[in-house]
Image (cartoon, rainbow, N blue to C red; front, side, top):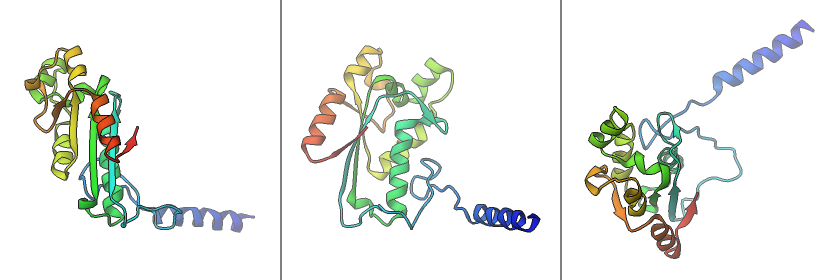
Length: 175
């Protein structure tokens, strides 16, 4: 009996030691992933990924906006699977409570007494090619001006306009 338990414990420990580590291969430091080669569905290198994200929540993951973090995670998964960045087109419609994630550091510091934790991530996403649109209806409702926004974002008439326009252009909605 003791031998069987020892073997089981040894096998479990080997499995844990062989477990992959969390990585951020493309968007460094954000959207951590684990790669799995033996799963049923993988990214397809023959596809062009045209995706529009609807980011409304102020909830966080690893200290940054969860919606922005999810975009980083997807980019990391696609990149680690060999999908070239030229085949990845991502748009974000940012509104609702998530609007505050797009404040520049000065405005964020004034409101929250600290620099915006999303600043670096917004820059990395923009550098990758993500189009980051902030709903002007949401900014108006929150007394946020264009000058209050992170320079890596752009104002759009509304999140609804971004979401409908890009879906009509063939982008898949990522809620």
